[in-house]
Length: 110
Image 1 (cartoon, rainbow, N blue to C red):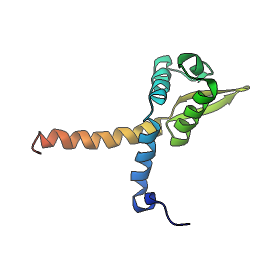
Image 2: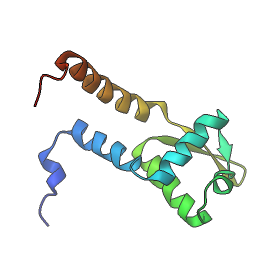
Image 3: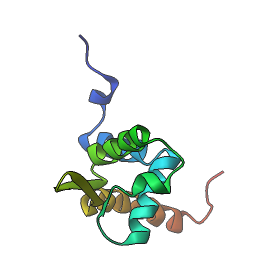
Image 4: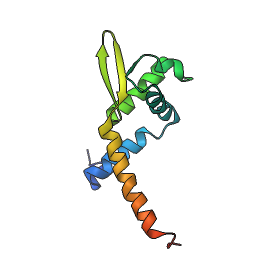
């Protein structure tokens, strides 16, 4: 089996692409917004906040967790979720570089 196209990019580029893909769905944005709103780890009430079936919500949580944007810990028979600072720090750093570039550029392109 051949190499994937991602092998042609740096580890940082692949990681940022994974993070961007994870937040590229409105349900995942809604989950992140809910976690911010409640400002604590939550166990199970995410399903009540979204117009989606429980298995679908679970799949979105899995994608966010695999990307490193949320953390999940077992408490009894439930999994409690909260934001993972490390994943969001990487996104923040990337957009700070972009923002700095745009501020210095001041519409000098096209």
